Image (cartoon, rainbow, N blue to C red):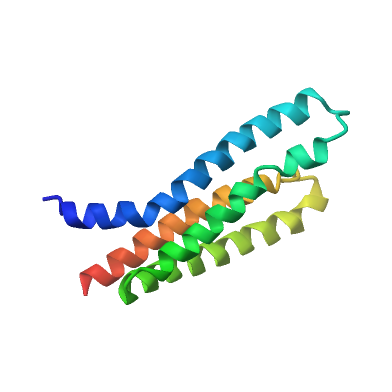
Length: 133
C-alpha cells in the first residue's frame, strides 16, 4: 500500500523546504505581532521584512526540489503552477477593477496563500489527468 522507498526519497527532497518554511511562518507571526504592537518602532521596516530571508531559502529549496524530479513529475508541477498563476492573475485583476466601486481592498499578503492553494488544486488536477492515461 505504501512505498517506503518512495516516501524516503520524497522526504529527502522536502527537507530543504521545511526548515525555511517553519522559520518563515515563525518570523511572520512574530513580525506581524511586533509591528502591530509597536506601530512607531524605529526598526519596524526591517522587522516587517524579516520573514523574507527564510522565504528566499524556501524559494530556492522549491526550485532545487523540482529540479530533482523526473520529467512527468516536473510537468505536473509546471501545469499546477501555470493554473495557479493564471487563476491568481484573474482574481487579482478582477478585484483591482471592482475596488473603485467600493469593494474592500485585499491585503496583498493573502495572494501568496491563494497561489499555494491553487497550485495544489492544479497539481491534483494534472496528476489525475496524467495518471488516467
